[in-house]
Amino acid sequence: MYEIKHIISSIRKDSPHFHHRQAISLCLVFPCLKISNRFSTTFCLSSNINCYNQQLINLSKEIHFNILDFKITNKHLAKDQIHVDYRFQHLIFNSIIDHVNYLIETSSTPTKTYLRSEVIPTPTFKPYKRKSSPYYHDTRNTPKRQ
Image (cartoon, rainbow, N blue to C red; front, side):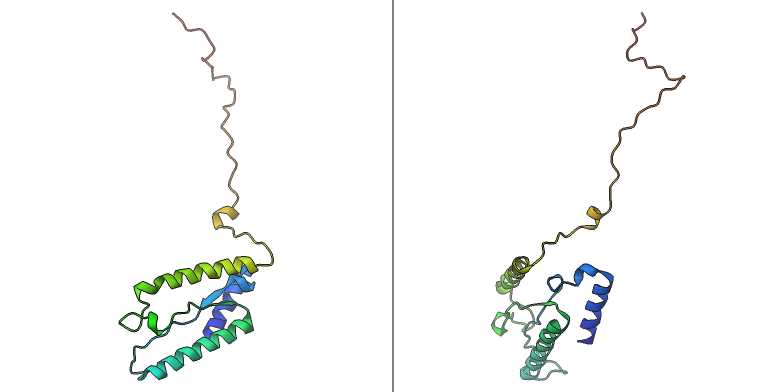
């Protein structure tokens, strides 16, 4: 959790608009049932994921950021027991949309997000005017010679 706390602090230090709770959201970790040398049982692996998710929730309360829970369960996993099955990927997209809508509704102060190109002032276009010169003779209004 130290790394996450450090990253969020760094982001907020460099970009003041990320100080608001609504500005940063992190998602909870999906379940995983693929055992490994480090996690030799599904119980051990699930316990580790649950512990991490709980620590992330606690950290969100401490340093004020949002948690996004996709509500992915073991039954949503693909045959590899690691990734979300393609039939349930819509749950992720729907959760993101719902979360953004929730943030918009709960936002107490209206803020406008500026793209970098909008912040940089653009020069105003001024048409070029040719200055009169003793050597310049305008032939547009003179009669044609025959």
